[in-house]
Length: 73
Image 1 (cartoon, rainbow, N blue to C red):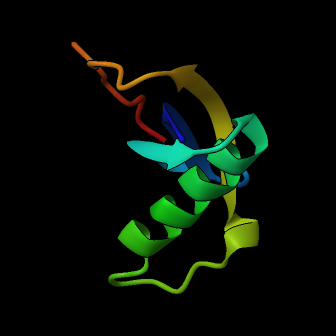
Image 2 (image 1 turned 30 degrees about the vertical axis):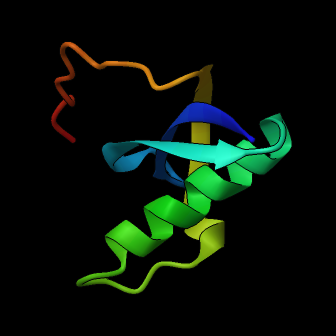
């Protein structure tokens, strides 16, 4: 297993960016694991499905985010 940092957003470019690390065997598995983690984190107050989560990007390793500022909708 390899560590990846995955960046996800709600499909349709709405909402904030979800950033988390996952352990996966390969890139495709990391994309799916990142979307699934995002779905678990976001389903606290709303009902999302996996189809609602888009993977924006994946970085190798556990990347330290030094600054992130979402744009207003």
